[in-house]
Length: 607
Image (spheres, rainbow, N blue to C red):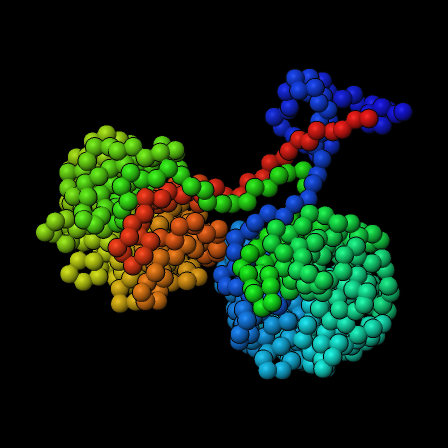
């Protein structure tokens, strides 16, 4: 039998421990464990950040890191909304002109095509093109139909095959960027198949035709039967090319998460979806090594927001997620957090109600009671770190708009310079007690005032463009971020501070106040908060900011608002807060870890 050296021209390394750096194809013998090990690729689905709204039967376009999901239903009125995926989360795009579901979708995030669908009542022949921000109506289909998932190609060269028009349809049309032309029909009428590939090399896989494992290839003129899929099912999603494709999910014979890869001649079953579904949206130009599905139906007209990413590589991908940390000793809200603290070193001081002078310090595992603040206070702001922290503003017994400032050295609190304008529910951030920022809040009226602290005194900075209180906040004195908030309404606006003045940033996906912020002006998280509709119930939703736009992130386990936040956008900490309209407080702490990817070694069997 040939040896590894005969095949590769190399000897297997004999090591006492696994290498610290791994590469594809590496093989070695671990003498400590007595195992032959190597680095091989494997396939897996991992959770991504959820869509902002539940829906199924929408269209998809793009790649795993630049995808589009549009239209769909929940059920009810067909949606017009579009969402864009950046590899981390979903953000709001431009609305379609015609709401529909069971629609056809193809192309890229900045050049997508939507066609057909059901606009309730009745099918649609509408076609729209997306340029990355706006949908424009263009040439209509010649045959009105729905169940149009068998669309593939790009915005200027697409194919729509089959569908449902008063019965299953065999009609095929090609799009040239402005109009549709009828071409060679399918061998048999069918609908709700998975389509992927290009106009001259496309695949139409499974669907409603019996047997529903059937797969057809299109060469730009003719349809040819090719190798059938291993598992049948309509409502599948597809991505890739005619020689490297992937299909996933199904509605028949039962709702399934089955995933299969196609190499141009053979279908191979691979890792199943974590959430079984059909009629999902996602990256129709994704690949067999990096694809995406979002939304879909998990039951009859039961929609989901779940997003999953498919990866095939030597790396193990661990999805971003929140995990429980140690509880606060005292449940409370409205305290001062160390906004520049870390996941393993943060403080939370004051809070209430009633107003508190408690201090607690987190070490990555548990909270320890520290020395009390000089003032009992609530609705305060915080900044800095455990070794150089700051508490300011808020309300104290008998004083609803306090000017207090206290400085923390990790052990004791001492009095600092007073705020120029006393207020509560203000935003706060900064890297230390010598470089902090306080803004907005409520005094006699809601305030636009901004103040900067230098370790001794506060001085006026540029005013907020709109008076707000109860904002989410993070960042530094010269690169601060404030988002959401409340005055006479709950806001979705974002403001960025440059050390002198405020400028408008990207709007929140959903208006909210009392969010917990962490990170920087260009890499932030906004966790939880209070919803914009009465009775202003707390939210579990989490969003991330890249300096331009907000997108979704994995949700908190505990819905809450008005708690504390610290850390970074990939290693954040959220603690305390209210879990209802303001009378019930939580001690729960949650830790966020961003997505990670690392090469993994496998034990190789020998015989």
